[in-house]
Length: 82
Image (cartoon, rainbow, N blue to C red; front, top):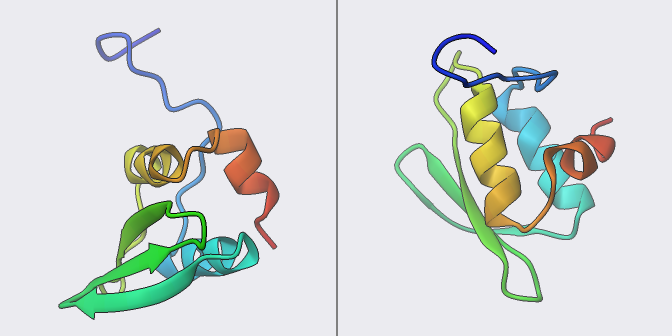
């Protein structure tokens, strides 16, 4: 381990559009947008927010938080990537 015990493993850096596509494949729908942040909700009540800043990718830390928000492991979340 390095950097104080924090490792990113094999978590990729994704574009916001890719994350939105994954969420859509999992049955999430966009329920609102406030500024550059899009909010998604599933029929079972799970929800998350994806920042949508032009030209900016989502960091591994943020991807982990999105997966946690929707009660999925990072591996399961990434399996829905196209």
